[in-house]
Length: 153
Image (tube, rainbow, N blue to C red; front, side, top):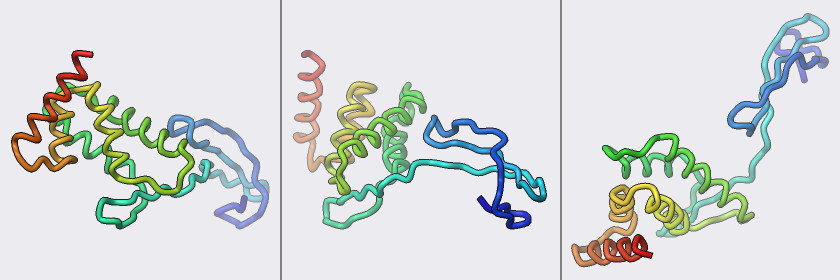
């Protein structure tokens, strides 16, 4: 590791600690020549995960889009932000563990709805109404009936 101050190619690690929920390591370093101290971060390089949209376009997976959708669905509902962040993290972990480079947006939407139905039914219906783009009231009522069936099991 080169020193950012004098460009010498020798440093020693003074301290290491996990950050970002254990997904990366923060290292405090010192240059062996000029004794300048600086911080570096080390994390596992993840393979890019591509989302294939309904219309066929592709974009890189972004967990913040899932979290924003969850926050919007849970607006004015008694659901903690930590719970929504946990759902987002679970979904990303599951997607990356599948070992595929591309995933359909529909699959992500279904994963979100599955978890949201267990957290808050009103938020689930809100999310489903946007995600499934209910065309009329009858489709909306059918979705509610399905939710009631699941709850009774």
